Structures are given as structure tokens and as C-alpha cells.
Length: 195
Image (cartoon, rainbow, N blue to C red; front, side, top):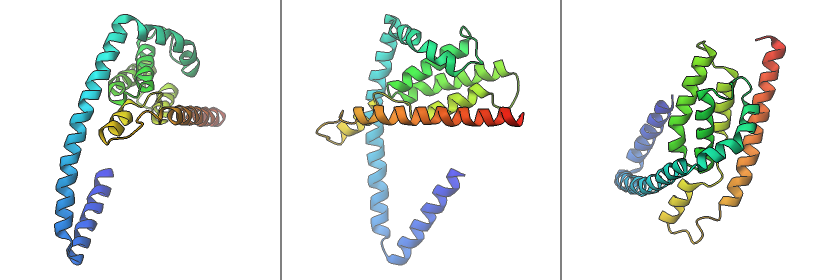
């Protein structure tokens, strides 16, 4: 569906430029944007490699294990259907920890692994309660240190690239609590309807 929307917008833009005689400007903007996208991607690669390396060091140093121990009591309450020692719980904790450090790209494979384990635990093709909860948490932009955004701000010459950390924490708290409340509300409705 998203592909169709993008295709529709591109076709409308090109037709509009043809009738207004601004095709040269459209071509120029296309090539400039493509060049800029490649430059930003390469710039972000270095940040991602750095933070993935830091995560690996933290993993070997036991920092992730310590963080997992801190978050485990909270996460086991959020996901009561999953046994505490199940592999899905480890992947969920890793996914949440990576998201907290703004490493969405590193968190995605762990989230997929967690979904696979939860599906195996559920034993059916429909989404389980825990799968829906993890999806809600991931889409609530769970982040404490937005490393990718900080890297983009550094790339574009921001005077204070880390000034967004405070507002990010507030936004994360509000969006995550909101996502959990909505998740629990719809779970309660499903129970009442006997679904």
C-alpha cells in the first residue's frame, strides 16, 4: 500500500512539473536528494558500527546482563504469558535495551527473534497477547538516548546536538505508558467479549 502511495505522489509531482515547466528543478532536486541520502547513510553507518561495538563490549562486560536483571521484574509483569526463563524473554529484554539506547536497527533482529519465540510458545497462527504488547511497545518509540538523531544533528552542524535527550525521555515515557494503557484496555475488552 505504501508503495502505491509513493508511486501516486511521484507521478502527480512529475505531471505537475511537466505542466508548470519546472522539470529541470525536479531533476535537480532528485539528484541532490539522492546524493544527500547516500552521504547521510554512510555517516549513520559509522555511528551504528560504533554503538553496535559499544553494545558488544557492554554485553561482554556484563552491562547488558545487569540491565536485563534491572528490567526483568518490570518486563515479566508486562508479559505475564511468557515464563521468565523462556528464550523469548531474553530477546525481549535485549530488544528493549537496544531501543532504549536508540539503536532501532540493532533492536529489530532481536524483536523478530522474540516474535518467533512467542509464536512458537503460542502455537497458533494469530498474534498472542504478548506479541501485541511487544509491537505496541516498539511502535511507541521507546528511546532514552536517540543516538541516530544525535548523529544526524551532528552531521548537519547542530550547535547542541544532545539537547533533545531530555524531551526524548519525556516523550518516551508518555508514549510508552500510553501504548501500554491502550494495549491493556483492548486486552480487557477482548476478555469481556470472550474472544
